Every structure is written in C-alpha cells, then in structure tokens.
Image 1 (cartoon, rainbow, N blue to C red):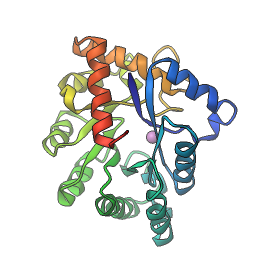
Image 2: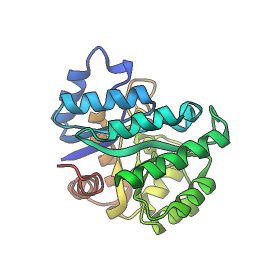
Image 3: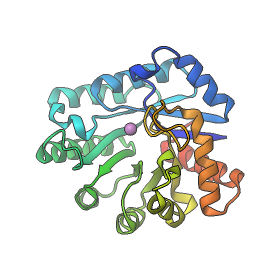
Image 4: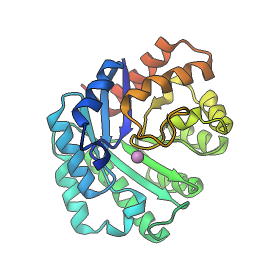
Length: 253
Ligand code: NI
C-alpha cells in the first residue's frame, strides 16, 4: 500500500474525471490521498473532497504565493475549517523566494501565523520552501517544537541535514525521475527511510516520460519504484516504510 501525501485534486484540472482519478489511484495501491490546500478556496475544496471520499484527507493552508491574501479573516476561516473531520495538517505554507508572488514580508508573516495555528491545533505542518531554505529553517527553529514535512524537497545537503536535525520529515515528488535531477536523487539517498514520504503534487510534476501531462496520484507507485532503485532497497520496504511514516505523522486512521 502507498500514500500520496500531497496533491491538489480540488483543482479544476480534475473537474471532468475526479472519481476516475481516485479510482485509478486505488487500483495502483494508493490507500490514502492527502489533498493539500493552497488557498482558502482550495482548503475548502480539500475538506469537501475529504468528506466525499473515504480515502482522502485534507490539509488547510495558504501557499506562500498567496500570502498577501492571508489576513485575519482568512486565519479565522482556516481555524474553523481545521475543526472539520479528516483535516490532518496545516499547509501548504512556507516561503517561495523563487517566484516572489507575494512580498517576502507578507510571506514571513503568513508563515509565522500558520505555524502558530498548527501549534494551537496540534497539527503537523506541510512546508513549501523554494530558494528560501535558510530563512525557512530559521523561522521553524525559532518556533520549535513543531512537527513538519518539507514538501517537494528541492534543497541541498545542508538544508536536508538542518531539517533532519529538527526531526522533520522530507517528501519527494516525481521530479526525482527527471534526467537532470541527479542532485535530488543524491538527497533521496541521504534521507533515512524512517523520515521519507512520497507525494505527487498532482496536477504538477508528472514523472519522466509523462512530462507536460497532468500528474495523478496513481503515479506515486512509479515514484516508489524510483526511490527503490535509488536507495537499492526493495519496493515493498519502500512502500511499507513511507506508508507507515505517513500514517503516523498525519495520524491517518
Ligand atoms: Ni503543492
């Protein structure tokens, strides 16, 4: 069994065939799907999917891109959403200094407030960090103790070590299969199995051979196979450990 710990099935890319996508995932052995919120609206969508499908769980949060929209009202609504059944994380939240769609100040403020919310609600954080590793780590360190997973890991060895030292989990997407992603594959090698999780980030980041197409949660199987090859560990062991990590980290049941 496998878990896709991060995808966005509430997005309109899935409007035409969402049932089918979720069915296909189940057939590929994906036991649970975590639909992670990116905006208030998509956090609502995540909760709605979680209530409709037994295998879907929700994260609620505002992506760093949309930090400028994270006001008091948004915080109040996130807090309300968090009370719904099957909400298992706050996220995605964090910093994105690559695209800078919100100012750095807005990003840091929204990040800090979502960290506080996660602590208040006793939920783990799903962290998005792109070209902001040092700052993200500094903020998280200050906020300790927190439980966090670094989603779509794209940092270097230093960042990886910093995250592991704080007890965080690291999650990899299908971009580790890209021809030019040897650096990422090295990070997969360095991540202990008891800290590693899998995610598709669908509809984004389709694996090599499917690039440019919509990604789907069933591809987490291909991802597990890739991790198995990179680490030289059997597929079953990769599936068991990543699934066990996801179940205990997000308290799925
Ligand atoms: Ni995402």
